Amino acid sequence: MIHDTTIVFSRELRPVLRDPFSVIFTMVQPLFFLVLFSPLLPEETGLQWFVPGMIVMSCLFGAGSTGGNLLFEMQTGSHERMLVSPLRRSALIVGRALKEIVPTMVHSVLIIAITIPFGFRPHAGAVFGLLLLAIMCVGLGALSYSLALASKNKEWIFWAVQQTISFPLLLLAGMLLPIEGGPAWLQFLSKLNPLSYLVNAERELFNGEVFTANVGLGLLAAVGVAALGLWVGTRQMRHAVA
Amino acid sequence: MTDTMIRTSALTKRFTVKKETVEAVRGLDLRVMRGEMVALLGPNGAGKSTTLRMLTTLLPPTSGEAEVAGFDVVTRQREVRARIGYIGQGNGAGHSQRGRDELISQGRAYGLSVADARRRAQELIDSLDLGAVADRVVSSLSGGQRRRLDIAMGLIHAPELLFLDEPSTGLDPQNRANLQEHVVRMHAEHGTTIVLTTHYLDEADALADRVIVIDHGKLIADDTPERLKADHAGDRITLTFDSEDELRRAEGHTLGITAARTGLTLTLRADGGRHLVQKLMRGFDEAGVHVSAVEVARPTLDDVFLALTGRSLREENQA
Image (cartoon, rainbow over all chains, first blue to last red; front, side, top):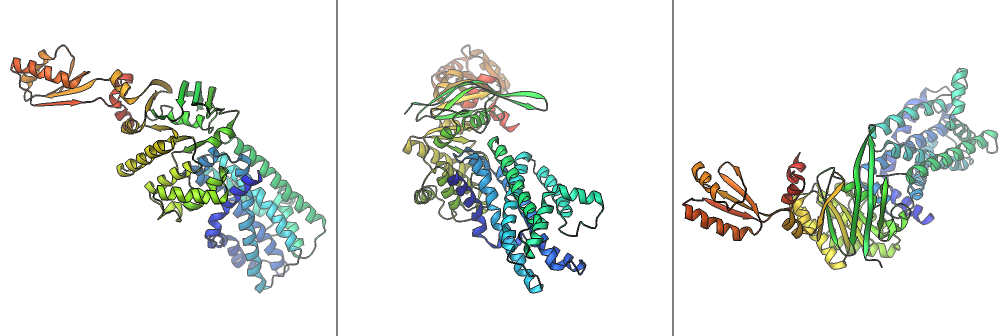
């Protein structure tokens, strides 16, 4: 299993290693938000509040859309070729999902590096924050791959569902604006969103509070999403027919 | 070592499309021996690819059984997968990857060490003439180059049994000839058992030791191309005349063989065409009928398909 997962993981990672700049091109979205949106935020929030949210956002959109790569491989034929190979089906999903850690970490570090000159000051707890993020992106990646497998050869279904889900998740997690001042129903919906707990945890971790209840909830949310994603993904890959 | 590489009994696949049940493969009984090169021939939608997908563990059968390389395709999928090579209709190599990288990771997937996978990849790159493009991104390769890379991918672990699904669809005649040459060579050099599907008659004729004709999910003939032609379709004799009058007179001297008429030509089907033509011509001579052109053609697999189904495979493919 580890052998097979390693093969799938390194295969997925290879195009990224061959062409590292491709990773940077995929992170324009959070950069736009940093440059064009964060200046509009009220004084008291600022970068200390905003940057941790942006990091989760880059994971949501990066890992969340990675199923598109699998969809492309389903259309061109390499997915079918791998289904016929003796690689374990579970490795086909786990290896792919684990690979999401790499671009997510690169994006996060770049976002932090870019914002430091503008006054962002991450606390050492951020390291633990990145770990939580890595767990979450494995889960989101696996869910995205599952969605690709479920869409079969109907590409539009994948993108329609992915977009339809991503935006409410983004807004309800309070990545862009604080949820606390919102109406009760919105706060309630926010509590149903696992990303809300991760965003809260990241904010506390990046600002130096490590052993808090919110961090614990964030960890739980990340592990929960990862477990769900891998479970659903493995089930789907096992039953994948081509 | 078993000598039977593929054995199926009553293999059946039903799909439900919009509440309607379609029987793609109906009770197929196949047997392929080690070292054979077999073509599954039939029109589009005949069930060839569905059969191949069941044999390669991609699709579970609805009923019936199939054993490939000695293992059941449902209960022993991993064993089957480890022993077969599969070259599908699409591109095995990922379009965003580089060819050599994909060959090596494919080798690793089949249990080769990194060093062995590298060496084997290089061997195949050389023998399939991919040296110039192996380190380029797959999406930048031409159709023919990609197809050769697909073959290399399917051969990385030197499988004892290789499946090719419509290997030359979409290739120009030169690349098709080139690909067929590789298939023949691999069969000759390594004794690989090969099962391919095709709707190209000439391809089945040129490559296969044995042709299995499939139509509407059923096996309708199974023999060597030569025997199929001899059993199901005679030689075709085409006679052309200068005038309607000559043709009409000639019709009375066809030695009792029914002749089909189109314009100023008569077409006769019979065994031993060359010998028969001489007899026909003597008869025409004696009757004073002038024949302006004579053509004797050996039967093709299309004639066989026509004789078996009443439809021309060539026309089916164009439709």
